[in-house]
Image (cartoon, rainbow, N blue to C red; front, side):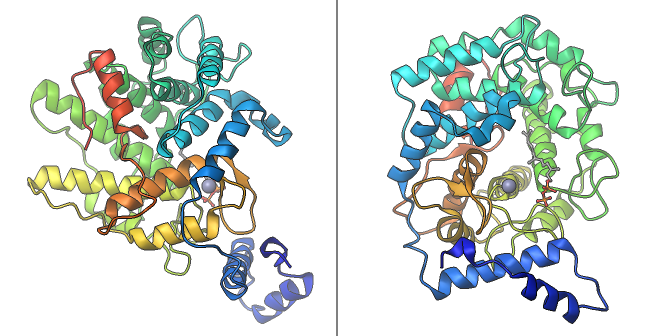
Length: 402
Ligand SMILES: CC(C)=CCC/C(C)=C/CC/C(C)=C/COP(=O)(O)OP(=O)(O)O
Ligand SMILES: [Zn+2]
C-alpha cells in the first residue's frame, strides 16, 4: 500500500465522530489525524528515503514544467508570471537556470504580459495586477540579463503603482480590485527592487501595517482579521522595506506601532513539534509553503531586532533541523517537486516555497549540510546575488541584503 493510500476509511472517520460525540470534530481535526497517520505510515514502512535533497529530480521536474505544463495548471492561467517565478526561483536555489532558449521564452512571455499602462497581468491581455507584477519583476531579475531587466517600463510602472494607492496607506491589487496587505507588499517590493520608492508612495503605509496586528499577535490581511503567516510576512517585509527607505532618506527608523515581540512570539509558536513544519494560523494544518512565509518572517524579525539592538548575534528562533526534516522527509516527492503535506500531490508553488524555506532553515543550522542552499534576500525572496545585480542595474542605493 502506498503512503497516499493510507487514508482514514469511512469506518475510521465514523469512529472518530463517535469518540468525539461531545465535541463535534471539525474537518480540520479530521484532516490533522489523517496527516498524523500518513507520517506514522511513512516512518513505519520506511517509505522515506534519506533526508537528502534530490537536486537532479527537482531540476528535471522544473525544466519539464517549463516545456509543457500539466493540464491541471489550466486554472492558473491568470497567474502565468507566478508560474515563471516559481520555476526560475526554484531552479536558481538549486544552482541551475533556464536554458538560453527557455530564458528567451520566459522574457518574451513576461514582456507580453506587461500592460501598456504599466504593471504586468496574468497573460493574454489580462489587466495588470500587483501580485503578478511582483512575480514578473522577480522572475525577470532572476533571469538577470540586461535584456530581461530592460523589459520593465519603469515610468509607467511607477505611475500605475501610485494610481492604486488608497489614502489609508493600503493599495488596491488592480484598478477595481480589493485592498489588503498583499497589495501593499507587492507595491513596495517592486518599487524597492526597481529603485522607485518615493515619499508619496510610502506615506501612511506603516500606519496601515500597524493596524493589521490581530489580538493573537500575528498580522491579518486587513484590519480586524486573524493573524496569518502569508499576510504577516507581507506586512513585516513591507515594514522592513519602509525602514530601509527611512534609514536612507531620513537617517532614522520608520515610525510604527507594531508590537514586534508579540509578532515574534506568535510566529515562533506556529512551528509544530510533531511534523516540524509551520502552520499558517492557529489550529490549522502544517503546510510546506509556510516554511518560507513564517520562516522568512522569523529571519526578518531577527535581523530587525539585531539591527535595532546593535547586536551581531544571529539566532533565528525556530528549529532548522525540524523544518528540514519536514521538508525533505515528508514533503519531497519522488520524481521531483515538493507537496504541501503528506497525502497531497506535488506542485510548483509548494516546490518554490519549500525550497525557499529550506534555504532559511539552512541559515539557521550550525553544522554544514550537503544540501546547503544559497541565501535569499528575505525582503523580496530572490537570491541575494540577483537582488544585487538588479539594484545596481536600476541604480538603487537602498539595499539590504543580510
Ligand atoms: C506576495 C504574496 C502575494 C503573498 C501571498 C501570501 C499568502 C500565502 C497569503 C495567504 C492567503 C490565504 C488566505 C491563505 C489561507 O488559505 P487556507 O485557508 O487554504 O490555508 P490555511 O488553512 O493554511 O490558513
Ligand atoms: Zn501551502
